[in-house]
Length: 543
Image 1 (cartoon, rainbow, N blue to C red):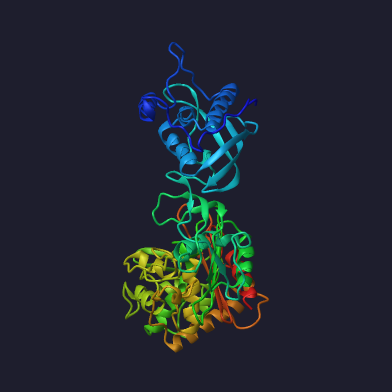
Image 2: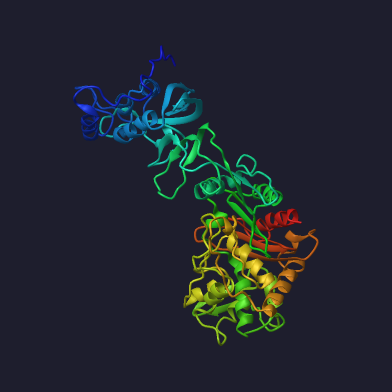
């Protein structure tokens, strides 16, 4: 596509409009005709998708105006001129991007990929900027013109609605995050840590001893969302931030979650609460390991079993019959297909086989009430009180007090219970030690945070839970996944049904020595199938 001689950008900014009318007057015309100005008088309005010639002509004119810094003209070739004009103006003025050269690739229908080469200059520092993006040409609804379908990602692929580009001195200095043994942790080597490191920088950058540099960043709409750095013009001096992460365990977690899409895992040190690893394999970059809010399935039975023991309903070797079905207030619950009923089962047997009906048959026993499971979760396991201070954004679980069928569903990790791998790794740590130690990623000594506290479990309860998890890992539903792991090991599996999904979410939590880990794989099937091998790999790396 011939481009001709490029016009130099004057003064390093885009001209919005020259003359008395101003850009505001242009916007009024644009708004009235549906975007992009009106067609020529007497020209019949076209319909249907733009053809190849129209795609080529529109992109040629849009790119030429963008290169020149002619915001008004570039915006006029889009179907949302006002919003396009605002972002394109920021591109030159706030982001200080100049010398723009755009090279389109071959169009695929109405979609046109392209490469942008430019430079960013700020207070004497200049760096080249290169990136790829794409646009789509559509038919204007009211004008019939071929127009660029406006998306912020046209300007840069990292931009979303409401975002803008800014080049300035960093709001917070860079950090050099290091693990517990001094290993430097970077998002390049540990991709899952990208969002975590960005949050750590936002929160602790001014406390880690560094000095700010100059960066081109994406500034997000949400006030609490940290900037996304795109290009560093001058480094400043990064401050060193010590974390609790283990480089070895983190590396294993990163590798393990790659087995399945939409998977997350967390490992903690039960004796201290320190987080050893956090990893996610998600297209959206969401830290589901810390912030997820989903049903945990039968891993919840650790808390339910503790409730039954603490309230004197039964014990590890006490009765917990496992019939084919159990009905609670008109709702019938079943076990996994193929599970043999066992009317003489003990709690340990029901736990290690993950029998739903065995737990549901016991939840109406005296002195249990609608709030008993909630009290156990909050008072013993430190869950659901919104007071965890991990060092980054996290969700500390929810076990609401409910009546009706959801009381039974909550007991087996369905209903209204919400958890994430961080919560379930902590549950395992509390179960095997008897002590609730709030998980954390950065020492509270750095900023004076007050870690959450909870009563913890009676020693006899913790001893029974630990033994039942050992049985599950060696003889029960977790045995296949934990096979080959030596030392003191334990586990609990879970499968959580989610409305609209054909396959259940896979959950698994376990321990080996002084490492506890929990994983979740969305639509991964049974707990031992997908999440189990992830946890086993992490525990193996934890030594």
